Image: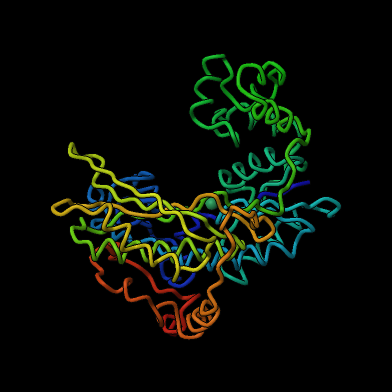
Length: 415
Ligand SMILES: [Mg+2]
């Protein structure tokens, strides 16, 4: 048996852990640059705040109903996610962390899964304050569906075990659930299925898998099998390393200076390098890009491809190319909206090419471990490259950001 554990309104719940007075009150989280609502508590949903609603449109409504607003704080959410996943890991022989707030657990061989599920739920709530729901089923697709039911029906008390619910009730639930709710179906394929008369989860379960494979693809065929309790999808416990890493972001306000672009790119290089080093990856080249507002007529986008003389994982070495990149792409009088970097052709140490005509040997930055330990001890901004400090005109607007309670000693909860 497989469980899917999913945190309830994850971002909003993270904020509530540190401000428990917000329990039972409407809370929303805004996207980068405080653009639109990307997470809402049940109370906020009840006020009619849509997913993705632009902040300027709901500002008055929020004021009227005293909705608590937060800018997104991914440092906090990442920290909370790690804690939740670490607790969940102990309840299973195998865990697949599927997203920041969801994981699959292999519960085979465990007795009385409903009680076990309640224990998991209680532990996570007690240890880190995070409310979660569990869906238990024979396959990943069924566990996902089961979780959907756990969220939807309060009488289940956060844990839905399909085996205990029984076939009749499960079929009934499938008959009243839209086919696009099935994991892996989505809206586009859901629409096509509905044109074929497959409207509900139950219809899809009873469709012909081979025919589905012909009309769509093998993934839909597998979903049909999985809905029938036949395992096709395994739990993946190791995530394959990235083939490409992107770090980019919209600016809080239009950027018109080369200095601001340089500082922003230095930041993105450091972010990408952090991800690369975590996975033991090295880059042989990077693409640097900047663009203006793509919703305007005079949209402009420029980029440059930079090849390194050797494979790198050092933000210090990679940042030495920032000047060259900005000189190549920056134009005076242009209002830039976004910039970023893409690192392609990532390699691991084992695949380091030592060809006679290839100069891609890995270049090690001996200062890097020292820089990393200074940051680990004194905080992320304790030591910086000078280019990172040229200008902060590119920074995000985060007017409602909470503290970094879990990662910064200066910002821990004060009681
Ligand atoms: Mg969730």
